[in-house]
Image (tube, rainbow, N blue to C red; front, top):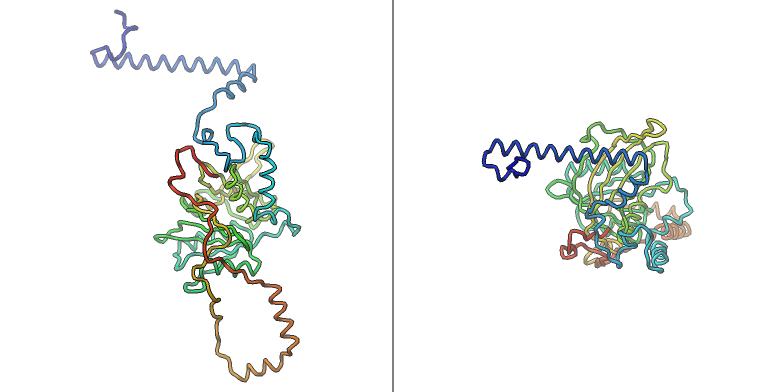
Length: 371
């Protein structure tokens, strides 16, 4: 019996068995290399052959094998073209025209003015949360950080109503657990919705090796992978946090990449090395979000009753009488009318109305995604 017909498992001698197995493996690798070289030579002369091979040999991943649900998807992910339903494009356009963010895209205001964003934390935040909030203030051009106080009157719904009356467009609250940031609540003002995200994998700018320095230019925004109705709502919500017109001379770009319902946040600066090559340098920070719930309107304030009493200061009676005598009734009436016209109170709801909430039973398979 020749050694070529023998299988390594049939050989009793250990050294001979390992030698034949090694030779068979080497011969198999050599044959594979020869096939690949021959195929590359053919594709170099015929580009159509390469396109045909790539079109036929598509790897199977969880992303391209996701389950199609016509109730939440705008198009079948397995089809290259648009949806086969004739009412699909009209229905999608109607949803975009009537969503809470339509005023941002149809506004006639100056597109270079960034929307005002109020950033705050949970009660008794730690140092790491404050550092992360400082990074967020640098990411969003119109962001402002205000430290949150503890007590009645500083609930999230009341803060949202207070910010809406002062021309803020968003409220961003960073929550923490075990002295580490673990969640973000993003509220679109003045009428909602409210999105709650789990926050993981945080790396500040100082923790990224070779990071670039940020400039005050308005960055460009790249939204990638939002294909469902829920994904469109989340993507448009993040789009309203940046000004419509970026400052391209800053060469800064913010990327929010959705992959398997995980939102990866990155910020880079790009540099043109030549007419064909572009280099990226990360600025930071980097973190990952995962949507847990989307609520309609502002956050609810349970047992919402009268507004909290305003702050009282010790003022002498003579000063009060003097101020009343100096102010005429006509002036006081005009001031009150101007204040009521400028600031309309926004009352938060008493109960939450969920548009979507994640539950473990929703993920029937690993191929089920919602964004």
